[in-house]
Length: 182
Image 1 (cartoon, rainbow, N blue to C red):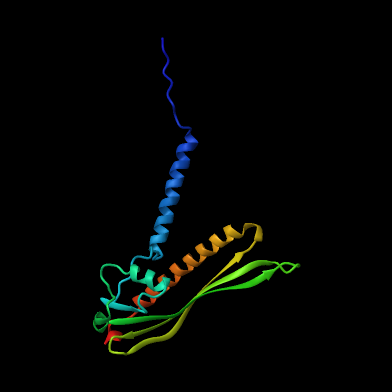
Image 2 (cartoon, rainbow, N blue to C red):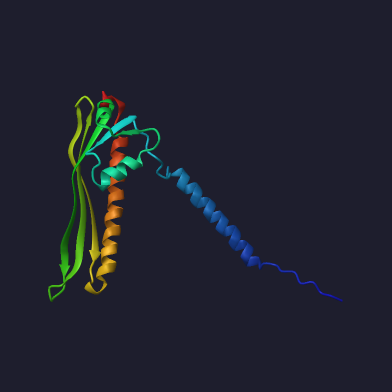
């Protein structure tokens, strides 16, 4: 005679699974009811943009690569006349300042800043925004015994700030109305 053992989940386990499912469904319904949605790609009211200077700094280059297929980024000097918008990025600066020292005067914390100034005009010369500043700041601790690791962390933070600045510029460009392009 052989005995067959059957595995059964304890009654409490199935109740927990049903309870988890009910909580997840309620959370999903709550989020959809409040108007929450993930940020999608921006819709722009223009189809051709020129980004100056050519080739520009790291922010200008990343910005050129960030537009989708609906927007053409013009590059050649003769194409600039056909641009609906001209975005000029000036004064792109990376700054580093000491914000904390220990009792013996050794640096313990830096503040990193990435600053860019931008101006936006139509091809006909109508200025939409002039000399707007975008600044990103990050604090970073410092330890001289881990100098190489802190240098790599600094480079990573600057890269992250650069991406944040590009996203802010894209959001600003998405707010431009077609009436402003005339």
